[in-house]
Image (cartoon, rainbow, N blue to C red):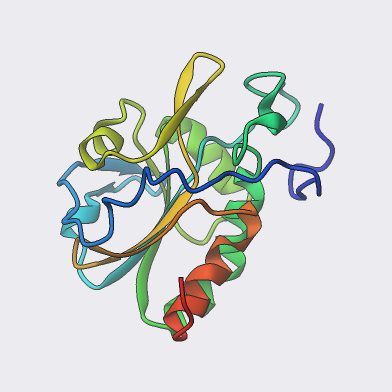
Length: 189
């Protein structure tokens, strides 16, 4: 059992940039319909304006065991709840900087994601890609754990369906929104 899932241990292994997201910058995203936790269907390729979409492996369920006993030893695996809370806490700051919409994306089902969205009081929807149709079409980086193929943590800044910026790997997980804000404010990636 983990301690507080909202905080990250200091000794988590850092993921390395393996180049698996290099192809994404400048990509016109594939038109794949994803179910959102607010009941809508979303295609990241068809959204107007600036969108921030962050991918994460999976959120855990309170009181239930982690997917695999070595979860914390997998570089970049731990931190989905702190990542979601980071984007929730910075949602207004992102919108103030011209971001029209924010989404979280995982391979979990929308029903599973709804529990997390409600529990964490998220101010934006989560998108479900349980069959990995979008992940495979966009060739998003993945890893396997506990017999499941999961998304590696990354953040995309998307302008009218085209990826303008990619943050990969995102570590620690609770700094993803600030990375985007710094970039929007004219900082470097």
